[in-house]
Image (cartoon, rainbow, N blue to C red):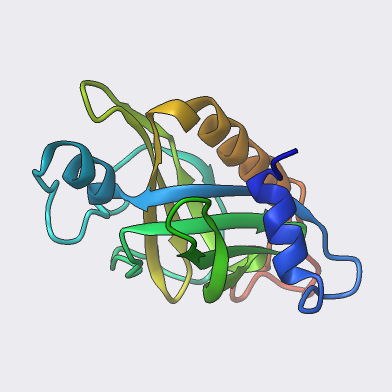
Length: 180
């Protein structure tokens, strides 16, 4: 029986996960211009991130300014959500993909916002996702046509995980207790 990408990420992180950290989701995705480039040969721009102009599905109040610089990723990556962080892996395997080297590891506390997922229609259909990471930039990627439903589930789970966490206090907000 074939393993899911979530199971592959679990195996990959077996020795590196923090105590109590669980893998919630794993998916192979493409840089936002990657799907269109692969399917049609036409890029959507050099950065592919777009920025924070999309309506945010989740916004965390805090001291950091909204990120706008794109986080650089290769054309194909594995994105994984754990109970503590959002990870980006390189892809191993040409035929059967799996998570390779950890390229980025963002603690969930550093996620500033999650944009409303955007469904791109046409021959290169994809679900575009943009995530603002405080102090780092905008992680932008697309779930390919056959994985749009999976992309919606993963993004929804990320939003729920973030909403369940206490917000960090804003500068000058008083007693130091988490606000919410």
